[in-house]
Length: 273
Image 1 (cartoon, one colour):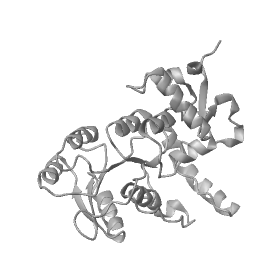
Image 2: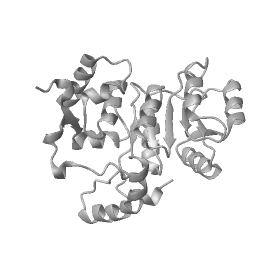
Image 3: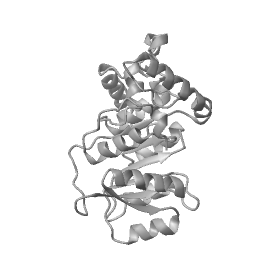
């Protein structure tokens, strides 16, 4: 007879939307379980991947997610209820022609994204708005080794009335950490030339001044293992590349506690970074 731990669970349409919806109020372990169930799995399989969670804790987490409609028994998932989770976020437009156009454009990137992993855009919502630590504009540290991408982030943040500091290698990062500067948010790429992004998350966790600074990982690493590891190490959000302007700006606004802007309804790939 199957136990609760042996039941195979899957994400519902709502659960899949939540992982690409940019803002979440889920607790860390709830979010980690949701990521793990992006592929139908039994709770017994997930327990080993949730260190520190006892069997009954995982069962309770699953029960809570099921009550809220994020997961269900795998055999209850309808064939037409899914969203292609290997492709970038779908635009839900009231105009079917817009949806068809977006789907055709997403297909161009679908094969590569499927090979690498899956697409997520999640950011834990702040309980309340945080105010800029350095005056009237938010200060954001961009840790990204691609100079063109870093410059694109900087220009985007300037449009949001944010001040950016760029760090593209270990020396730049150490200088930023040792400068005594305070930041409202850190955007972190995991794949850096001379220091690993996970090492940076470790360093931040014990840093006297920056330890409480929110971090959003923006990375081409789309494996579930990396997403779970980043969340476990304290990341407040994870956005997989290629990203859209809306995804990044909404994630930033969520983490610092600002209202998320209404969707423009325009083609997201027109503003891919």
